[in-house]
Image (cartoon, rainbow, N blue to C red; front, side, top):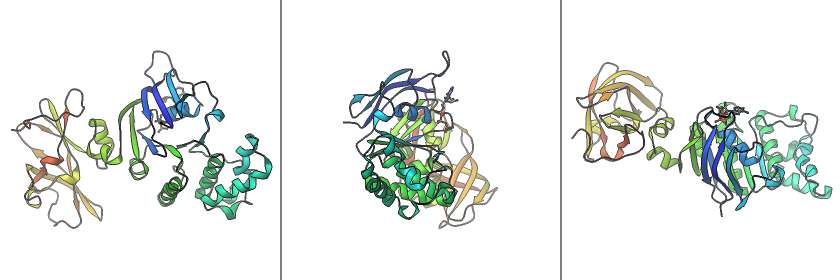
Length: 348
Ligand code: ATP
């Protein structure tokens, strides 16, 4: 049974306007780390808030543990939510911040210490229980917020961009900690982010949202290697997938698949004449920006990512033979922009 399920879940804030969330149907697996990923305004937070019970759906159902919970209050849903602004109580100690939900739930007082120490121990903040939030670093505050969320032993965790207030370095270590933590408690977690690296690194599966609509649900590998449409193809991956438009089909390939032709011996591949316009040197790799020429298609900017181990000499202004293995090509219908694998290939 899915821990959280939504059926045709819809939220329209203003009548007559496009929904912020449109007919979203999804189900989490037990113990899964599910990520909602999408650009700003794609409906991630609204979807999460409806699951939490903080926003009333316009239509559709939310189920938790197989039961429809639309009519239940947030507390009755056994859900814990951690927001981007994790709002600790500044006048309370770390201990009392973590114990706060236990008081609200009227858990007997003698159980508080054991539960608070358990939660604080899991997050490595056992030594900070006597401090006030202002005496903590950003990362420590984040952990207090998480401890406060887990102390109630919820059925589901909902996390809304909980790492976005941290600087890049802290963010990477907090990401790792959160993954470890998820492994150790095993609670089903839904995590909202617009950061694709975070989504790829942490998610068991990713729900890609755009304009309130689910574009794809899949593992990080699925959405990266087999995008369902051109939106997913270009939203995931930095730089994004290259798209070349033929008469009725769009052909996509990742910059790391577009390589000097003589480096791809053996594999069946498609060859292009590639003119390099400029080069970004990024240490571990060089990113080439250029264009390909051909009679059958319109080429926008085409990007190639070359590992630092590859030979130099692909400088701005130079022209080369580059190719893509056929197995790395992805095809999209030009009208619907959805995946469509045609035969024969459009250039044949
Ligand atoms: P971000 O990454 O910027 O937080 P998001 O994907 O979480 O974005 P939502 O906050 O869910 O997006 O917003 C989805 C759409 O709904 C946006 O167009 C937003 O302007 C609109 N919206 C959100 N909350 C309200 C509200 N209370 N009243 C009216 N419109 C709203």
